[in-house]
Image (tube, rainbow, N blue to C red; front, side):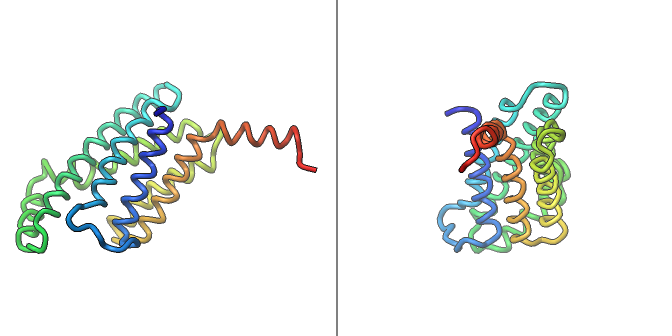
Length: 193
């Protein structure tokens, strides 16, 4: 598989995880927490964005931020797997939530700030193309901001899913920008009769 294909696979897995999170798909996650498995695998594949775009100073910063975001997503998914393991035991789940909330060394890097770094890092990668692919970059930026807003403020899964669709579409368009440009140029050279 090429790096670009790994990126596309990561976007697909990430989007599928948000389908589960939004509760749009039927809840058939027993005995496996599919949502977090797709999220975990997708986040790991999204690390490939560090290699697919042109290298420059902004890319170097974006690569570090993206890697930290992937690490945080791994931690977040691990916590969510533990939560899932409690099944219907709401008391145990609540006790773990309280423990995590009272432990800033876990709460901030793995729940509040850390996972956002993945979206920030991928947005920084996208900013490299603001002059040539403005709409795609704006889709990525808008999607990353609204994912956070819909999760932390609105607490609405459907808005979070729609934001993820915009975010992943923008990144997908940036990945395929050369193919789109070639196809557009061919159509200009040989218009249909």
